[in-house]
Amino acid sequence: MANAHPHGAQPQLRWDIFCRVVDNYGDIGVCWRLAAQLAQRGQSVRLFADDLSALRWMAPQGCPGVLVEAGLEPAASYDAPDVVIDAFGAGLTLAVVQALARRNGADGRAVAWLNLEYLSAQPYAAASHGLASPVHGGAAAGVRKWFFFPGFTPDTGGLLREPDLAQRQARFDRRSWLRDRGTVYAGQRVVSLFCYEPAVLPDWLLSLAAQAAQRPVDVLVTHGRAAGAVQAALAQLPTDWNPGARVTLRYLPALTQPDFDHLLWSADVNFVRGEDSLVRALWAGVPFIWHIYPQEDQAHQAKLAAFLDVVLEGPTHPGLKQYFYWWNGAVPGPAPQLQEDRWQPAFAAARARLLAQDDLVTRLLRFVAENR
Image 1: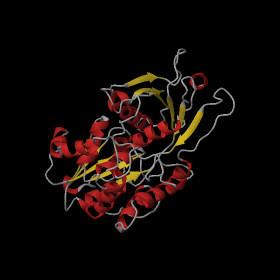
Image 2: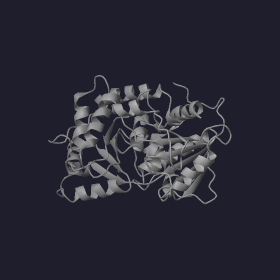
Image 3: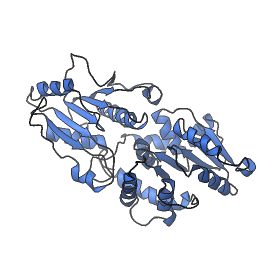
Image 4: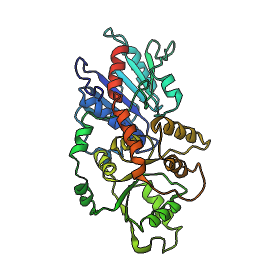
């Protein structure tokens, strides 16, 4: 595995991360993982966010070395750090920008201002990663700014991954975790569902019921939009949609980030959405289907195609990519069959390739060390 411990000669720096919450799970979820992983590697981190409500259940214990601040407008006494991360276009206030300019070069080192962008497998991510955007005028004149693009290839910013992830997975007890949440594992198919509101959800439930004639299915439905979507789908189905009640729907409470990982490790196939859960599904090492965030101009379909080409490269079972496109409304027709056993080699190969690369925090620390 590539070097996952960049401690060595890395100095402790002060980092500020600014996060404007659009999706309570996605934006703040990525920013919290980033903040926690920086702190776990000896960095001092402040996380500023305009909505902290999701952290109450996502990370109730906090993390040593991470200070959480409500709002994107710091106090008048704001002291600019060594590194500022503007996450997903949150936007820095004038007061923050002015503080960066005052701090810049004060100790002979430049303040690093990084725009952390959204994850994409499209070519622009690699082409734009690490590009400088010099600030020549205005309040931030002289401050150095860069674009940092997460990605799936060595020429991007990589993916968030804890150094001890493999060890935690090896210790994980699937049966015990499921039992504690009301599911006794007895060989049934276990499916996790974390989605938006896919139009095909009623057809999906019917297809699960048809396949359950051979093997019962437990669907672990996550809290929030997924649970609401399932309830709406059930209202569209006849009362006898589930013969013999061989599909069991289990509604979960809101999960901490570690327990969300445990959910993905417990399932035979995962349905995930957005950015953070996509990465966690990759590390889980079991087949998954990604519900990409839908956009009105259909730009998400090109993003989905790029992901499938880059991450699931090489020969894959022909039904796999079709399932991704069907779930995301790109192709019509009846629900394809879940075939996770046949799909497993493609996901195992993708995970192995990504584990061989440095993770995002390792690359980020290196990038800052080289550019300050």
